[in-house]
Length: 90
Ligand code: SF4
Image (cartoon, rainbow, N blue to C red; front, side, top):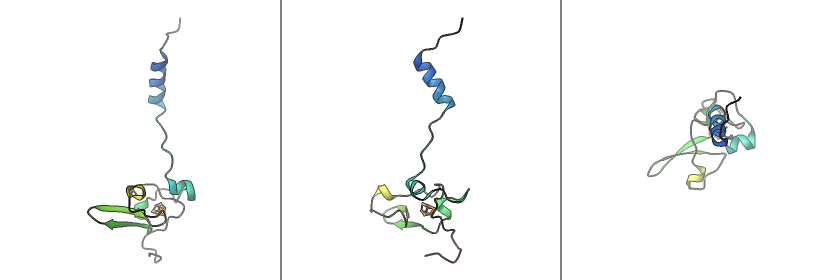
C-alpha cells in the first residue's frame, strides 16, 4: 500500500524541488537579454545619483526621482548593454 501525503505536504515538497523562478527585470522584458555574464555594473548607461545616499540609475530606463527607478548593479545586462570604456561612454 502506498503512503498517503496531505496536500500541504505535497505542495511543500514540490516547492522545495521547484523554487520560484524570478522573472527578468523590465529592461530585459523590453530589449531582451544582453551578453552572457555581463551585469549592469559593466554598462555605461548605469550611473550613480548622489543625494543623501547613493542611488544607481539606468539612463535608458529613466529616473522618476523615486525608488521605482532605483537600479541594482548586479542585474543581468539587457539588450541595450554598452560596455564601459569602449570609447562610446556618455
Ligand atoms: S545593461 Fe541595460 S538595464 Fe543594465 S544599465 Fe545597461 S541599459 Fe540599463
